[in-house]
Length: 144
Image 1 (cartoon, rainbow, N blue to C red):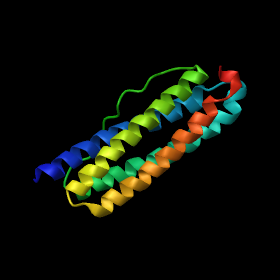
Image 2 (image 1 turned 120 degrees about the vertical axis):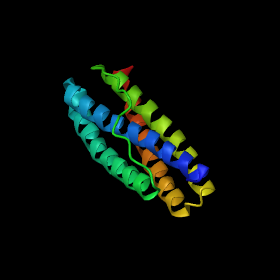
Image 3 (image 1 turned 180 degrees about the horizontal axis):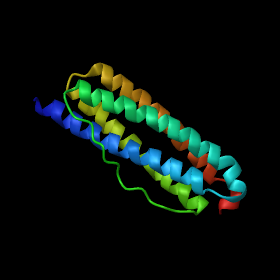
Image 4 (image 1 turned 45 degrees about the vertical axis):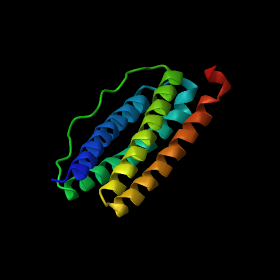
């Protein structure tokens, strides 16, 4: 297998493991968020689970298309019941995801996978919207 394609598959598998972790994290946070914040954040976290499942399915299919085997192991997830920490963990996960997907765009282009490059740019836009929404939630004066 071409080295550029192998590097792309390995990177996509790293992304997939992180998407699995995001699914677990959002589901865990939705179940654990309490109080008034729970009224807003529980549906927010539940909605993110659906988005992340879609991202994971997309990545797994691309890995197979490229000749790889999708990982079945998620990255570790941090447990917390503190609302501000939930949001900070979520924000960091989005920042890290955007960084990884930006690297994947470069790898896809280098491997000649222009369609994948464009699809990954769409994922970056989606993750950026998530990041902005989380940043807004963190501005809540009750979290200070």
